[in-house]
Image (cartoon, rainbow, N blue to C red; front, side, top):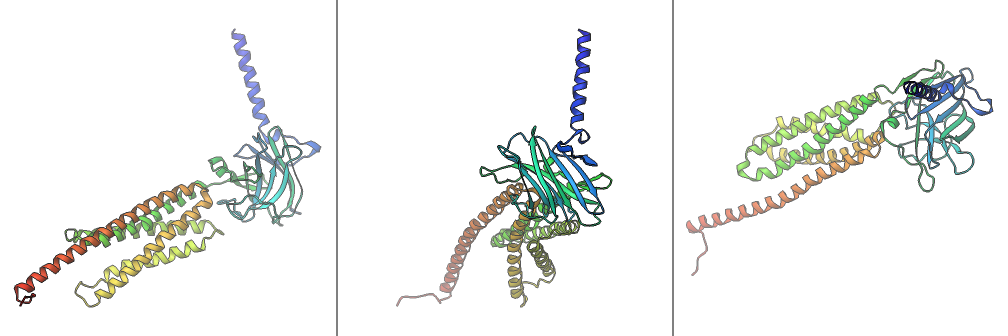
Length: 399
């Protein structure tokens, strides 16, 4: 019995060792006597890249192997990003795409990825390509191609993915699991080494932080401060508490918003070539107006000053414009975030819609209630005024 157990252990070790070896690019071979000088086991999605590169001519022969494709309703792609952006590596990538067919060889074509909503439409790419073909066997898709790179190229950013097809065989968005999010790296063609997507996680955390800070400050605290100022001051018992609550909300929104603005500037400097012109312009206008509001606080005239009326007009107009821009800007920020996290941003967008919708509903109810309070107060004051006038002999009389 002991010998049998020992034999099973040895056999298991042999099987595991053999399995591990087959999962290395060094043990992979190709038909038609294809051979490549260098290969790499890619760190995500159980994929492999083989290549031969002539630096003088820029000719790059590649074979990209993607395993685990158990059905023909999936697509596979390998791409180079000329901009050398690791984050996001997808936008601007020049892709080689393969789609397994029910019979025959997979369909292989090129696609220029211009945004995250791409459906991998067939089209020309920025590199000359020849010999593009693909095979599908043993649940593996292999893409073969020869690309001509610009002179002097020694490294590039490359990305690899797989995803599902729709009922009409149109490629759909890939998964956003970590293995798919991190399937990118900087590859040195000469040495065969790579630089992993270092800093990607921390940069995404900064994006999330930027989004949270801006949504809370400009998108929630500032409108809340405006609601407090407009409705609580109607109640005499809330004076001067409403004023301090208003100031607390607005100053907190400004400080937190500046923090979000700072993280945005850092993200912009770290993401060369990625611009969101409308979002950036709205943010600059928003911060400028908010700064003017803060400085206006220190220039506020006394209640009985002749300029107080004009100051109130300025404060109200600039305040409402600032809040309107801040809400629009939050939605623009969600759209920008969608380029990095896909459809997950929609959940955050819906949550914000719920919050701002609830705040708007509260404002409508308070608007109606304060109007009722003001009308009752005005009627009471009129009655008091009529009573005083009657007692002084100025009331109506009957002859």
